[in-house]
Image 1 (tube, helix red, strand yellow):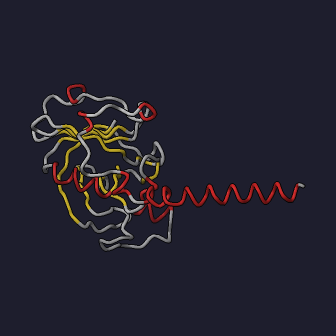
Image 2 (tube, rainbow, N blue to C red; image 1 turned 90 degrees about the horizontal axis):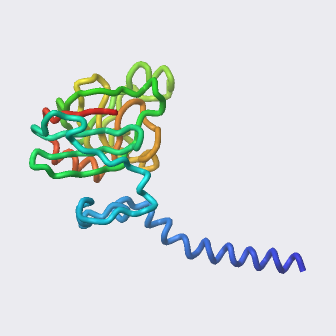
Image 3 (cartoon, rainbow, N blue to C red; image 1 turned 30 degrees about the horizontal axis):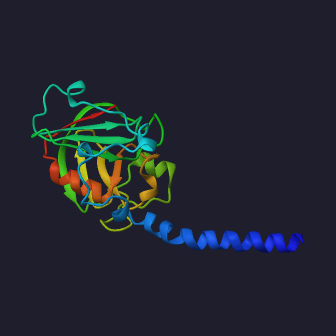
Length: 199
């Protein structure tokens, strides 16, 4: 009798896994997770289960003027808020630094932008992980993803990532990371000189 229960249970679990596989495969594709033809977030109703994930922000609470645009990196809610010079608004989920020691807060600005960034680990990164390369060319294995925006603080960037598991987590060595399609969008919107605040 217990043998038939096990086989029934196995059959049910196998059927459930088979049904879930297409959804899991779709979840791995961030293009499906973040379609580009959706209505702007300001024109849609919030999803109740995500209400606590992001704290509402207003640019006037952080900047004296919009100027060339403003970016707020909210480390607590793991979100990047962007306000354009025309008052447009975008919100992106992000990765944040692994520890408080790696976290920097305050005002800075975008001083340089690069498509296909190369990566040179800092001496501290190499000390913590001696297996890191001295230098990495742009490409799929590069931890800076497809686009990078450099800040006035040395070694602090807002960049993409090829490892989508990092988004929404404390997973960086100090930088703010976005999905590659999100950093591409933010990159196009952002001008050199855009003010940035990390809180």
